[in-house]
Length: 298
Image (cartoon, rainbow, N blue to C red):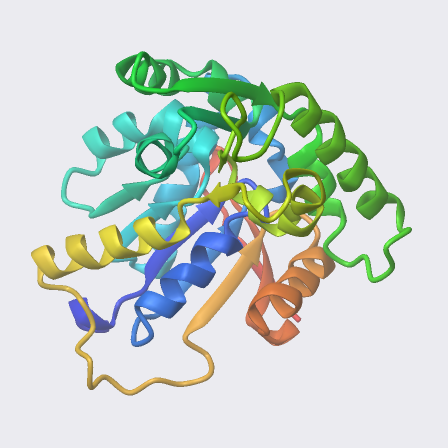
């Protein structure tokens, strides 16, 4: 059994979008080990009900604890954070836990026009957690909120696309055009939206398509770096942060998926420069059917 400081940090998302958070975690915490799980067989979370998402969140948390002995958990999914993080905290009180939420507060500090756009999944925007956050900031700036049905799924499917005219890539461009237009005028002039919150971890990987419509002056705000800093703070407080002189190796990150293994391998290579051998398929059944665990590497 590895020591507390040597145990891995668990990270999960409904798919490969959480790799944007994992990328920030690896940059902030280069001496740590990570176990990432993409629950792609059950995605997209943003178009599921809260009860379903909470059930998956509990099952994955239990899996990561039992099978990998994680010392902390990063819920790298806005929808899962909104639907279940309060229950996970109650059930796993001793586990350092970091969730993600649309970065409305950082955007508040950045805007100069007083108008902020928020794009996210319908599930995130409809959640009580997001509505409370939005209500707490009303009156300070004007928020334009836009659900982006299908965008996270299109980004997921585009992972292996290499040509700009591939169907999923073309769909991302079309969806970004539709949803940014629905927000209203974007820019730095009075009355325009000068700050855009990316309220889904997948959307970081659509930055180029979004920039086509926002222009270079609009700030895009995502949550990876703040989440990584908060993870460091919690591990330091728990006394489980890997020491700065801990040896590092090429295999400090392992990735698992409940869905398409080739898709995860393509994403790991494209966005993290990790080899296919770092990825494996895993079965994470419902908690009440957790008698059998299956992992198949490549």
